[in-house]
Image 1 (cartoon, protein in one colour):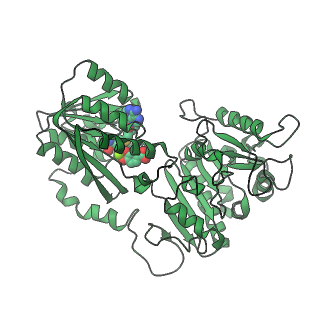
Image 2 (cartoon, rainbow, N blue to C red):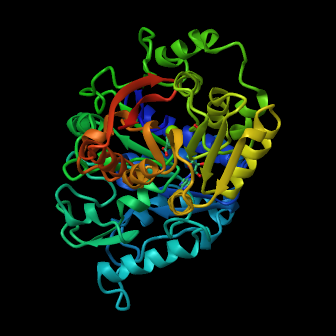
Image 3 (cartoon, rainbow, N blue to C red):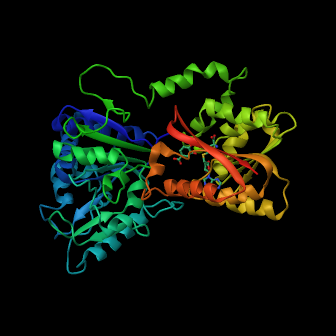
Length: 491
Ligand code: SAH
Ligand code: DHB
Ligand code: MG
């Protein structure tokens, strides 16, 4: 639901900087009511520094507990300490010096400067990667802190951080930080976060002003390959925001689901809260059945602060009706989360039916167990904790009886493998439903840096290859934005 970038357009560059500063301050305050510490990644550039100046000048600055904030950089010019062209030096002048002792010195994680001990960008990149790793959560997939907000500027060529079009740094996936010795923009030597490190951030905010950026903005939002327009790969794990002035937004197609905050006639948005797609989901809600979703199920994921990625109610109802229409009694699910889709599947399977749901996270499984047990169908759901691949392999090995219907909705990286394993647990006629196979249209992009997109593309190829499954993909819009479901039948 959160794949589509959200675009906000402001009248001019000054308002953009002020509004971004206000947004950042508000976000920091909100984040601090939720967890500690908060990690924010700064950017250089004209707009980036203007934002920091606006933060420094804001009366709301004092509402943030700066002692709890860690400051990082997305990239740096590899220059001697104190060089006025360093992003760090400019950020200190614009904001950090003004915060004084409120922001502890050891919370300011500048990228290394050039010294005798750190003579080249590779050495600097290694040092910064180690510093990131020191602040990474123990269970992190990638050795970086839990970046809450990562700010990025963008160049007219579409570069973000120091990831430039056509450069080898764009495809680095085994490191969090890289050296760049040949920046087309002076000075040539740079240090930059890589795409995996950027995309690990919960929120990525791309801030751009001026008509020189208009083409690159439009190309990135159209989903150009990130090898050509690196900004297309500036995607947050939870949310991606494009904060633009009118000039930078001037070439963006108007149906991209953006919000315009400039004065003008209100226009109905297709996507996002209160949009046409979301409201049609509301309109059809009365069709979805006599039973409304029990509170314990509807609110479980939100209450436990799980990601808001359960299927929508109309999609859940589709799962229920497919299950019932095919007379499925044995249902398998990959990806339980809070048990929302599980509940619809259990309803469809009827009083004689069972749902076996596979979930990696013991925490998610516990939330689902509790919420399902608060309904009258919890006893028909069995949750298996662990990586789905291992559980499926075990079930195959044990000769588990075939399932009648399968809903695949766990991690997207492994989708092709899941298809093979699930078919091995099927019989002719088994229905396999696979969620999130369109991803806002990102599946069109062969070079998309997001492993979920690549996993989905591999899955679609696998379906086409396998002679023993027939199927279709239905594109969907609704509360969760633009996506799609594959519906397959085993021959
Ligand atoms: N089907 C749910 C949403 C699932 S979200 C619903 O619509 O209500 C995806 C879930 O897959 C998450 O809970 C995540 O923890 C789980 N997951 C991620 N990787 C997994 C893996 N390798 N094996 C099993 N589950 C996994
Ligand atoms: C994501 C996963 C989902 O299962 C979903 O329905 C929506 C988004 C995700 O990982 O981004
Ligand atoms: Mg899903």
